[in-house]
Length: 98
Image (cartoon, helix red, strand yellow):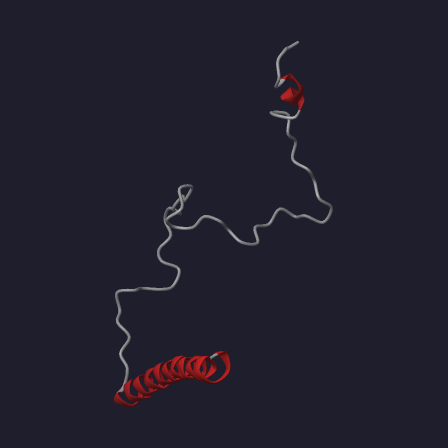
């Protein structure tokens, strides 16, 4: 028998058994094998899952204009939100706070 301050933990540490949960089939819901993590293990023999990344996407002129217009609308929306927030803050400070 061990004597010491950690002797009581001897039975708790090292003798862990995996608990079985009823209805658990052992399938992985969200795999934690992510690139950049210290425990990442690359799958051998598998290519990229999203297809061949070396082929560039070619857009027609009409698609380019629609894409640019969508980006401009998103940027204007964000800009207007910031300007509106700044204006509301200035009005709050000048009319209510002081």
